[in-house]
Image 1: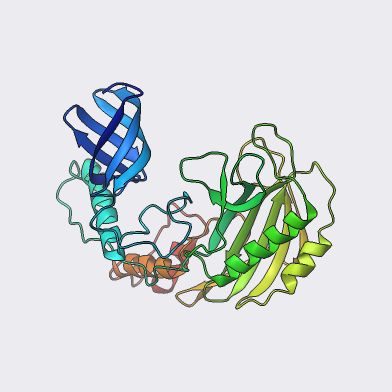
Image 2: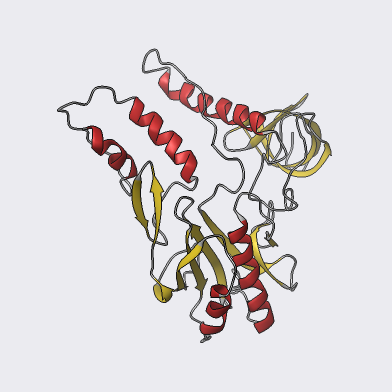
Length: 331
């Protein structure tokens, strides 16, 4: 294979992280965002040690495994790769990926047992955190708020019908976008480093229903926050807004971070509950994004501890301390 060459082939399997493997007579090509069984057309970007990396141009034939996606943004939005596959097939792909990663290191450590993968209690509306970006769907197009277009660093797809979050996220996104569209305020251009609107961070406790909304902008303009805050507070939501914040970020990097944060309403944290424990979560602190899935993980980890009477457990790699807190009652 040569750089710039256009190839076609069937995706044999998906490697970590989400890289489809296409085998041709000329060798192997790795292409992102392709699913097992799809016949794809891709352009070779580079070749290294006989293995090519390509960019997906077109799906010529869908996979027999695909059953259609419940999300209208699937395919254009870069947020989800496997959503057109039944959940059972998604689990198989992820199980193969995890086992392959573990095989590469654990076979040197002696015999070990792989117990498989555990499914999430819910497949849709499960996320407790989303970072949306402001931008446009095409150059000089209308303001958009959502996720990056698949394969694009610049284009943004408005995901007002996203299915991995619940209805409150969608209502908040639409409310904020409609307001700033009406005001005609510019988004922050990543190349020119000018503009105002950067990101919208929304976090929600699945168990508590508490919602934290954070608008992230540059400090290049002085804009009143009161009108959009008022609109948010007037929304009919299933949960309740615990806090609305305005974070200023003048970093050149396209990341969500805080140079300075102002509390516009309520407080700068929300609560979530896992396995009977209550956690206080700030805007930028790490917390498992699938609360119900996290409970499955932590219950599994706790079941492995065994007899802990009169023993001390050391948490040697602690983030917010969730795992240590789960184990604290039994040691």
